[in-house]
Length: 154
Image (cartoon, rainbow, N blue to C red; front, side, top):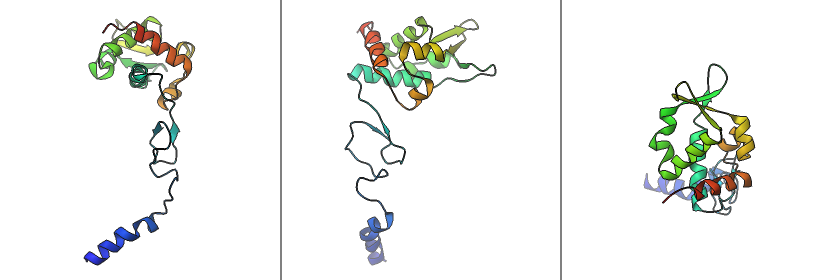
C-alpha cells in the first residue's frame, strides 16, 4: 500500500499534464496576477501607492455590490453600502462621500437606497462597471483616488 502511494506521489506530475509556465500553474513571474492558476488570467496593473491600492479595493467592493433593480437601474440599499464592512475606515467613508458628491451614487427614497449612474462613473472614473469587476483601472481612476486620499484626515 505504501509503495503504491509513493508511486502516485512520484508519478503525479506525469499525469497532471501541467508544464512549467502553463497558464494553469501558479507563477510569480508577473507583477500582479488575479487567479494565475486559471486559464483566464487577468493582468492587474500596479497601483501608484498603498493608499490607492486600498481605494481600488474599496471602490470595487462598493460599486460591484450594485444589482439591477426592477426598473432597470443599478440600486443597492444604503445601509449595505454605508456599513463598515464596505468602507472599512475613514478612507472608505471619504471615498463614499466623494462618490455621492460627484453624483456617481445618487441617494433616493429618503436616502434609503443608492442608485449607481454608470454614465457619470465612466466620465469621472474612466472605467465601466465590467472594468471594475475585472479590476481594470485607468490613470484617471488613479488620479481620482489620489485626489480623494488628499482629503482624508489621519
